[in-house]
Length: 295
Length: 313
Image (cartoon, rainbow over the protein chains, first blue to last red):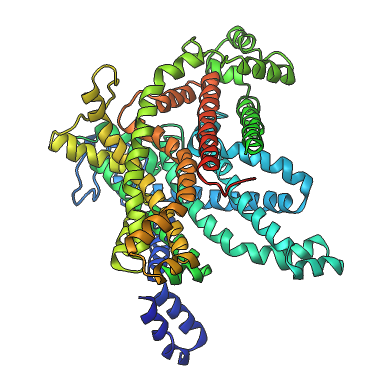
């Protein structure tokens, strides 16, 4: 596959620069682009949920309870007669908001702590011990325990999922900072009196961006899954908010007579996580051509 | 070697100390009054006061911390507020299903992932590799409950081959024990298999590009011999490390899987504890599970020093 696309890239040079570049990415990483397109599509649908939802996602309608998929209710109804499709459209918002917030928050926190740890020896010893300790606690278990801290809300869910993700980002950033510090050009920059903020902006950040973006994508995927797991277990997003995990948690009671309540949100979840993971793999290969050429 | 072993063993002390602090803070960083939360929404002031005294929350925080740590070192994890029984006892009662599921999943995943990962690396770039890796991403993205309910529907309800849910102790009935483990193991194991297969592939692929592999091939050794003797031997250490580190992921998955298959294990205990705000149980479970995880990785690290003479720190 790689050989063909590499040769195919040559004639495209004639086209305008931006278009040929996009075309090249599409041809070299078709899966990554597919993942990205699906993800963006899901985001648009989620954003437009109030416009697209055929029914109210919360209003109870006991007459129509547990209706199988038909023309009125494309994906059936739940035990309270609520339209599954509408609830799932709103549920996509929760997944995306939590996933993006966790990815962003974990990346920023990890970058901050990682740079400090990589740069200041004393802080390094203390911070890395804390990170080792956090990594010794299985992530979902820590998130579950953090959910016991206070009344459940989306914010608490985001925080509970973020904290176990931070150590991995810290390790990544710290490793990059440590290796960059040893580079001759950085030592030269330090020698001529470059101050820390400039060093950070000119040397450290540019070198961390690529691995961080890949890591953030994987965190995004994992956070979407963990949010659903926490809600499924009854310790995540408050039950009155329609999230995919909550829909499945309610639907599991009727799974044998109304499979659609578990199957459809489960498939939506799998599709979202899959598209993010594929996007992450593509980004990794794109940033690390050594890997992609070998595979 | 002994200096390394001792250093490696001592290194778990700061890790477990941090875990203890984190676990302690879970209760004490609480923005609300923990005693009031435990007591519930419509508890009387006297009842709240009672709980506060019972948990020792009326003392200074540092006194509480050292008192708690001292009791931990003595093996006392405290008592459940809701069930009014020692936490250690509760954990021991629930440990068998969880341990059984974790072990069976590890065996299942390792047996499936190693051959697939090696095959993918050996056939890198071919359709075999691409198929295996596509399946891995797919398995990695599928939520445990979707696979779980799918298996229940197919294997248990329609084909009636396996029990739908629950757990039977090994000492009670070994056949039923295994029968009840099959579906949870597959549901949980596919995710873990995907992780291991990807890791195995990249490790083996890296080694296959080494000079000594080229040398071995150049001098005319058979492909199989190069793969097994030269490549796999060297891939063992990183692969086993991944298995060890992956146990954290596995434990997280166990909690969800137990819930899908109504298995009364540590996961159920934890969820019930969170729902009842039973902090001593939450703390005890996290400490025990983390301690277990740290110990396994310690054992794995120490095994290397015995198996691999190059590792000398």
